[in-house]
Length: 203
Image (cartoon, rainbow, N blue to C red; front, side, top):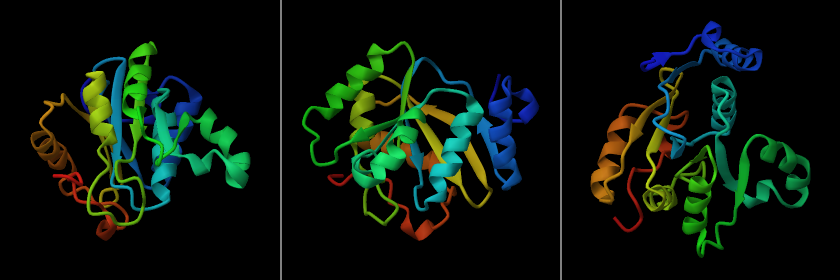
């Protein structure tokens, strides 16, 4: 199977077909290319709107693949977490404490490789608000685990969710960021002015 626009009739389960039909009903199309293996890291960019979560979640359901994703721990704790936490976990969510990162890269890399199938997805901007750089955690996790990076785009201009571009990281951040930026060229979010530049803080 090559890179293709998904059609509901191609999908084997009714839940997948229903999720894709909902996306289509809102004007969204989805492109998908089979993943290169059972382990990897996926980034979803740009993240400039609350709508991104729902588009991404419907895409996940349409594919029928058990992607795990990292979310801020406030979604899983406290008053909000008591209401949303069980749903977030059922949908593949994993809480991450942003201010307690010691050893987190190594733990997540080991977890990816320890499971028979594990693709971990995250939004490298870490927030919908503008930031002048991407968080580099996704990069270090993929390099530490020696797994491919899936570069997922949310293109609001074309209303297209793309799950087609996989990169083998070289370990050279500048070279790899250039390859990531090439995928995201002319793929604007809902609020393009809020999208972070594709660079790391220390680059």
